[in-house]
Amino acid sequence: MDHFQHRDGILFAEDVPLPLIAEEVGTPVYVYSRATLVRHARVFRDALSELKQPHIAFAVKANPNLAVLRLLANEGYGADVVSGGELTRALKAGMKPEDIVFSGVGKTHAELQQGLEEGIGQFNIESEEEGYELAAIARRFGKRAACALRVNPDVDARTHEKISTGKRENKFGVPLDRAAAIYTALAKEEGLDMRGIAVHIGSQLADLEPLEAAFGKVGALIKELRAGGCSVTHADLGGGLGVPYKAGEELPAPAEYGAMVTRLTRDWNVQLMFEPGRVIAGNAGVLLTRVIRVKRGIERPFLVVDAAMNDLARPAMYGAWHDFEAVEPTGEKTIAHIVGPICETGDTFAMDRKIDVLAPGDLAVFRTAGAYGATMASSYNSRGFVAEVLVDGDRYAVVADRIAAGAIMDAERVPDWLIG
Ligand SMILES: *Cc1c(COP(=O)(O)O)cnc(C)c1O
Image 1 (cartoon, rainbow, N blue to C red):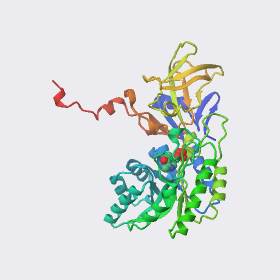
Image 2: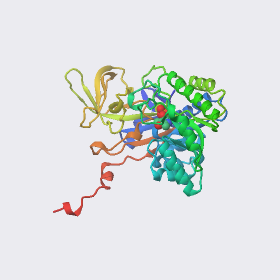
Image 3: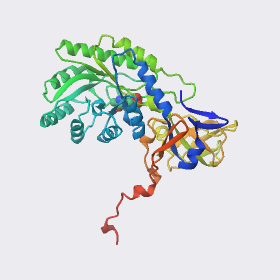
Image 4: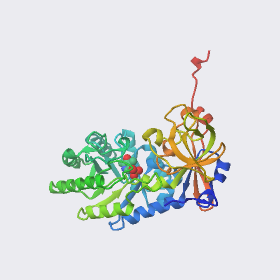
């Protein structure tokens, strides 16, 4: 459920009409609903209510806006970060260091050090090599780093290959059949407090079976480790729950996920941790755009909008579907291609899509753009960075300014020796 609904023929975000935001902030612009974010955060937490004090860390990469992170911190969420930049953001947004988990296959020496200095709650180690490097840094600082070992369970998450992370050939985690040996070896390092296992098999998962298969393997590994004399007190089950991108699409509800986790982990006797991203933020945002022109095509018209692949990369990157609708629909429908202005054929949001009839100057939204939207934006074609707005009831705030192409250019130099 979300808070983007038509009222008297106009699409609102909560109690704010979208034409007002377009007028005052300009387009394209991401619009997030506070009520939807809060609702999703609570629904997910409630789904895990049978568990003993689960730790929930929002996957910052899904939506790293400081206001969004602050809102989630207020809901008792921690953060799952995958870079030093995300760690800095999470702290700036008010997340407690001990509630922060650091994931990622390529944490640099500087990033490992930053995590230690900030006193974060847990490092999710993705290789034996990383473990030894962290151990050495921790020893030098006279600290012990709390760690989980991320395993690659070799499970096909049955999602888009670019967001599948738990198959043998993927770069993430250590192979399951070597996990016990690596865990045992790292547990001997005085700089490390090896305390758990982590797993994350992919994103936008449309069914629970692959997750259940992966968690089953984690449970068996925990038993094996304990039988071998290792201590395991934590298990981080990652994120991955999918969200509906098409009206009417059925996906597993957080409650079903929670029931599955509760059943599977009953005798694990660990502190469970979670890293949801998309399921919290996805349907809490839309990308508001204005039609530039309607261009006659050969078989279908091209609806050229002012949002492009640099603002919302998912269609170009993953062939992803985003529902598209007019802010003030007339009721008339047509079939058209929806494209942005960028000079790439990949800058196509949809082909042969049945959509509301729109004219130049009209407003429309791409739905379900709250996760992996603004965070993936670039300034390709010198278009500047898209703005972000957070709505709360009948008020809204610009939570990220539009960064104009000129401001980006300010960081560039022409060396003297090129100026003749
Ligand atoms: C991306 C990511 C997540 C979040 O995935 P969602 O599908 O958005 O829930 C969680 N954990 C890790 C390690 C990730 O890389």
